[in-house]
Amino acid sequence: MRDKASAPDIGEEGGSQRLSFLHPMADGQSGKLPKPPLAAPQLSNCVQARDKMRFCQALSAILAVVGTVVMGAGAQGQEAAPPTLTLTKAIATALQLHPSLRAADQRVESARQRREVRRSETRLLTDFRLTAQRYDWLQPNKENLLGGGSTDVYADLGLRKLLYSGGRVEAQISAAELGLFRSRETDRRVRQQVVYGVARAYYQLVEAQRVVEARQEALRAMEQHAQLTRDLLAAGKVARVDVLRAEVKVADLRQALLKAQNATRLAKLALRNAMGVTEAGELVVLSTLAAPTAPPETGTALAEALSQRPDWLASQLAVRQAEADRTAAAAERKPSLSAVASYNSEGSDVPNLENWNVGFAVSLPVFDGGRIRAATREAEAELGARQAERELLRQQLELEVTGAVLRIQDALERVAATTKAVAEARETLNIQRRAYELGVGTALDVFDAQTALTQADVNHTQALTDAQTATAELTYAVGRDPQPQPEEQ
Picture (tube, rainbow, N blue to C red):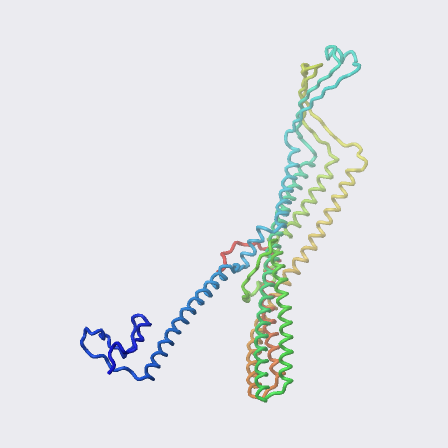
């Protein structure tokens, strides 16, 4: 029997771990004899088990480190991803940054100042005049007035208040006020136009992204089918022509995907332009579309448009403004009455001879070379043009509202039809794939089914986009102002 010293203490290499054939109290304290050593094959198995355990521990540590690095990189990628742009955010950004809104605001301010210019004619006007002249020769009375000097210094303070203008100034003020109201309605319409442009561009981008997703799904499915044909060819179940047809179909789908991706990039540029954003940032929108609610009746929508649409209200204000301009032009023939007063002082070096006067001034045009008559005819022609434009806008308004309602109805019907078509096309593709795998179908049947499914997906997306775009078009056609909405989650 071998003693403890001659036994191979393999457990010392593993720290506190020892092999099972060493007695735990083999140091002599227990007084018991150690167990007999294991045979050589058993010892070799134990060594291999120990090495395998160490290798697994090392591999687990490496995988843990790699997993930590990968998770950290993924977290960084998530933090660096741009935020999702909702339609509400896009509209809010456009209402803050779009340059057309700044231009509209400036036109409103211009109209406001034009009204103040017209109002100033009814207020008390004051002017001061100071002149200094040196004469080579003066008349005797003028020389005596100046005390024998040759320098004439004259100061005058004048006051003027219009009392009667024959209705000219009042008509001009009325026209300016109507012009201010008209510019405000135009400003409202510009805002509605910006909102409609953003909504349309947003839905077009969503449609483009959904088309890309449909193309990607079709490409993945066709790549799987191509791999299946290669496997069946290797098994001798199909001809090589099936593999070639599948590879050609894959190439066609890749080309279609590239075109869809390029359309998405163009749609992002269009949305950025509609928002008035100049910096080149990444735009990420949700590729989700829902069918809108049914539109109102055409008569109800027309009544709403005639009561609130800004450009229709502005056209009515334009007619009234033209009428006021015609009244102001015709009033030029009438006399005007003003109260005047002045205080003046005159002297040789310093004005010291004072004088004042108070009175009334009447002005009446006698001969103006035909200016007033031409101005009146011009105003009458402008009034006729404004009336014709109002009638034209009324017809255009009815056409836009009716067309938007019909487009919503048509799109909703197509949404229902394409929803069913997508489900049927997907089921058909599954059947054709299974038939091809069983050898009872052809590759052309699979290709046709895949093409039909892709086209059904695209048609469904277009129907949803058309429905949402037509709804935004109806909102714009009836003249609804953008309302603040809670942010989408």
